[in-house]
Image 1 (cartoon, helix red, strand yellow):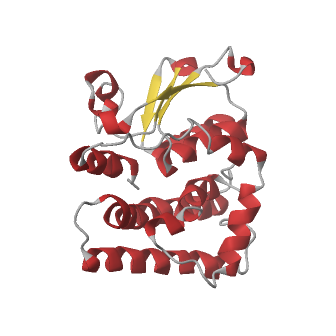
Image 2 (cartoon, rainbow, N blue to C red):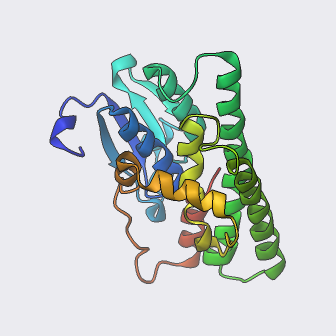
Length: 234
C-alpha cells in the first residue's frame, strides 16, 4: 500500500515501472483514487504466473481489480483509463464530440505510439543481436508519430482540448523517446507539452509507482527480451 491515506484502498493495481504501468498510476493519482500497488517483477515473469493470469489471461501489465465493484477486473491500459474516467466522470468529456476526440488520440497512442516506440526500445536496447534495419524502421516510425503529435500540439495545449486520459496515456511514452534512440530534436511543441505534464504533481507521483529497479546483473538475454516485450506493449 502506498501511503497512509490509502488505508481504505478499493482498487488493486498490478503494475511494473513501465510506460504502460505509469499510464494507470498517473490516472489514479490524478483522480485521487485510493489504491494498493502489487508490483510484478517482469524479469522473473511474475506476469505469466497462474495467479496473475487469472486476472489478465494475456499475461501483461497493467491490470486493476476494483473491489468497490464486486472485484471487477480491467486489463489493457487504454481500457483501464476509460473505465476510471467513466467511474469518476473526469478526464473524458461527456459530449459525443469531445469524448470522440479524446478516444481518437487515446487510440493513436494504443495503436501507434506505444507499439512502435516499444519495438524501437526492444531492438535498440534489449535485443542481443543488433539488426540495423529493424532499429531504423521503428525509430523512424516513432519519430514520424511524434512529429504528428508535435504538429497537432502547435495549436492545442493538450491532445484533445483539456487535459485528459489521452495525455496520460501518451506522455509516459513520449517522455522516454531518447531511451529508444528516437530523436525529438526540433519538436518544440511536443517538448512544451512534455514539460507541462512533467510539472503536474500527480504525474510526478505516478511515474514513481512502483520504484524502478535496474535489471539484475547477469540476467540472461532470454529473460531480458521476455521482460522487455512484456514491458513495451502498446
